[in-house]
Length: 194
Image 1 (tube, rainbow, N blue to C red):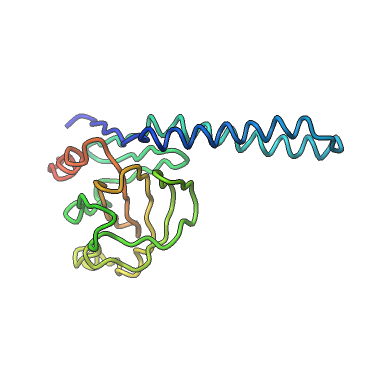
Image 2: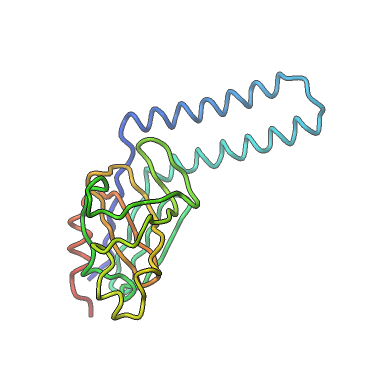
């Protein structure tokens, strides 16, 4: 099996427009700061912070359009904005992977974002789970010496809540990802490797 690449779903037009509006707003704050009479040190410090935020948000917007998953015979690399995670295939509980609607009852319930970016139409980063979902956390996890209460978080890159791949890991967290073709990645994960 060669390396397979699976693209994550990009923003819809509404989310793209909102993100670009936010970037424009931050740039306008920077412009207004330049015009405001402030002490030189304060102006430089505030300008530096705003430029850093503008740069970070611009990079997230750019990288969100190039987010992907690379699947090799031995590893899976999740390359999303701000987070790059490489997992061995043995640490993926592929038999428990599901394609779900996050608004359904059997989907994992998210409590709060502990790190990341969030806006309407886009959730990125580490989230705490409200409770260990029995539909996701199964006996297979317990048989691998990982108690269900150890799965308390999830790494998300979600642009479409209706069709996401939920993939438990033995690392103690779930991967919840919006993909262009979630069925193709799930099939690739279920294909036996040598």
